[in-house]
Amino acid sequence: MENLSARLCALSPSATLAMSQKSQELKSQGLDIINLSVGEPDFFTPDHIKEAAKKAVDDNFSFYTPVPGYMSLREAISRKLKSENGVDFSPAQIVVGNGAKQEICNVILSIVDKGDEVIIPTPAWVSYFEMVKLAEGVNVPFLCGQEQDFKILPHQLESLITPRTKAFLFCSPSNPTGAIYTKEELAAIVEVLAKYSKIIVIADEIYEHICYSGQPTSIASFPEMKDRVVIINGVSKAYAMTGWRIGFCAAPAYIAKAVSKLQSQYTSGCSSIAQKAAEAAYNGPQDCVEEMRQEFERRRDLICSAVQDIPGFRLDKKPSGAFYIFPDVSALFGKQTPDGKVIANADDVAMYLLETGHVAGVSGEAFGDPSCIRFSYATSQAKISEAMRRVKEALAKLRP
Ligand code: PMP
Ligand code: GLU
Image 1 (tube, rainbow, N blue to C red):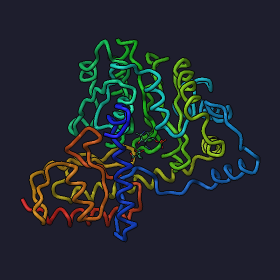
Image 2: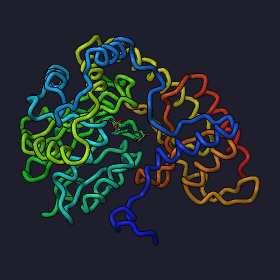
Image 3: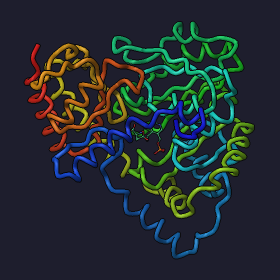
Image 4: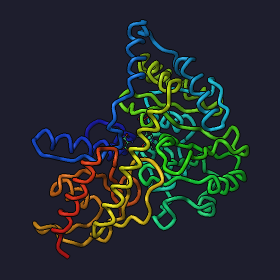
């Protein structure tokens, strides 16, 4: 073994980014791969946001930024949280970082001690588990199947709570399932959490604008949850700004202060130019968000109807938000590929579809559900149709 820390050795690489990288490599070898692996809008960042970034360069926003982010950006986020989510977080309770990813990790590192348990309804985004591991916490995943729309039920949540439970971490709209907790479902979850005042809720709302059933409710809007919820959000998905790397946490003041302290030691405040762009995103016109949302909805309808026509894929319900489908592919396990390999699990399905169909998806394994596979439909309708045609064709070659 190389001379690496045990902490690092225990960490898995990001399955989403690994699959995306693999499909880039195959593309550069000349293969015509359709990449439905990584979750990232294919749209360009809206012009008024790009203009704000150019102006920031010309206005010499070139110095170190405050560790938690420019006050003007945190004020814009505070206003957004009030007007769109009905929640009160002052700028002092907001920390801006290099994407929502960094802020989730910062929050976990700030509150989780060795042995502390973090309840995570699964399937869930791949990085949560690894972040908890980094903090030497204990993942408490709970598999919520398709029959319960991939959402945890209040009694299931309560059965997982122990004196070591530190946090409940969930994502709505969800990556990878697209499921959204309704206001009523959240109210029932809040009723359970209200009994356990020490548990901190980390609510990942990064997909809040990509939603096909009206504005989702934030768990932070329940009065019982006051001073116990950390909201995670950012500009990556709503404004097609994945590469700009701006996300934030909005938290009880003591957590925001801790996150800022942590950030001061290992990354400092994030990019000045990207922050000014994010400020323009929050303060500027919002029609771009709605236009992209509408196109995502058309793509969702397209991919869902195509999947209904693919034997071996089971998707009971159209996802309510985000830009992923997460069909069950366990009906394919045990089948044989044309070159005699047996498909044993979702990893094998993903690999077979990549190699034979030239379509990249991500196995459900890393999301905590080994019977499913995830496809991102944040790509053109033409590519979605062609990808599903290829998937169907490749699967038709499998032998029982
Ligand atoms: N949360 C979820 C559920 C995600 O899918 C992602 C992936 N982009 C993130 C957080 C992180 O987003 P970013 O770091 O680009 O803001
Ligand atoms: N969150 C996106 C995904 O799940 C982007 C890649 C990543 O950071 O995981 O594909």
